[in-house]
Image: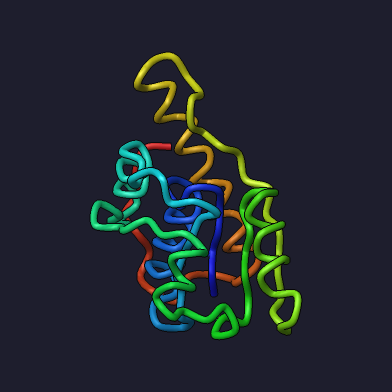
Length: 151
């Protein structure tokens, strides 16, 4: 399974980390962005850490870098696009392959909120949107429940 967004710095790393935490080895999971021009976002690391998902070592990557490194999108049976741009890019790259692509409209928290707490609240909302979509799509976690964090 591949989660994708615009920069692979906020939404798709959240989804990749939560999928691995909640479902373990049930599926091969990666994430990518249309571009990889940013590092993983610090607020992303903070709010996923609250639920036991560690992303401080996440290395951002783009679709183009995946291709350069020999990663074939055909190895994925499902691509979950979290932004319109990543959905377009995934459709473009897989037009000759049989890969299911789903679009989950997830809020972009970057730039929202004027204080640190308001920004964290926006990132938590994004994290919780992804978690809700994931649980609805894949069912209850197969791994032990992550610790409870701020909401």
